[in-house]
Image (tube, rainbow, N blue to C red):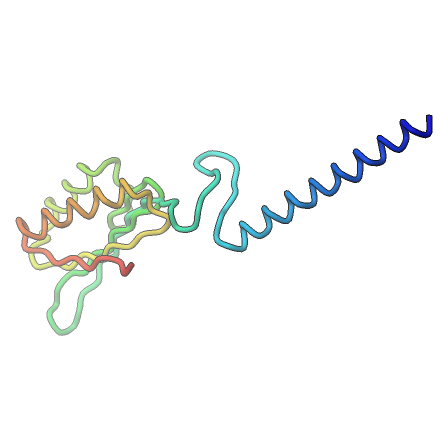
Amino acid sequence: MANGEKKKRKIGVVGGAGVAVIALILFLLSRLGFGFGFGSGDGLSFGQNTAQANVETKEETTDDADKTVITIKVSEDKIYYGGELCESIDDLKERITADDAAGATFVLEQEYAIKSAMDDVKALLAELEQSLDIKVKYPEK
């Protein structure tokens, strides 16, 4: 009986040490910019690799040139134009072309943007810079 109790204690000590090591590793990873999450759209992420695409548009006028400034925000996989959610990249294009955007400046912002969504928005804005004579301020890297 004494031998069985020693085995249980040994397994308990080794198991406890293993749990402590795993907890320490998770703590260190979270401090280094790694994230852990559960639920819809969440999960294991590494630093800024997780992206959300929300595009918001804020209309402002500048005093010196009286030009419209519109903010487009990409958050996760959602695109916002003027604070309104766009259903797709085509919807964003329709909204920009429907507005009198010639000469306007668009400010592109991102908040946890998914790379593919951000790339789609950047490609659309680059195309419209040429065809509609708009200016785009891209986020700093």
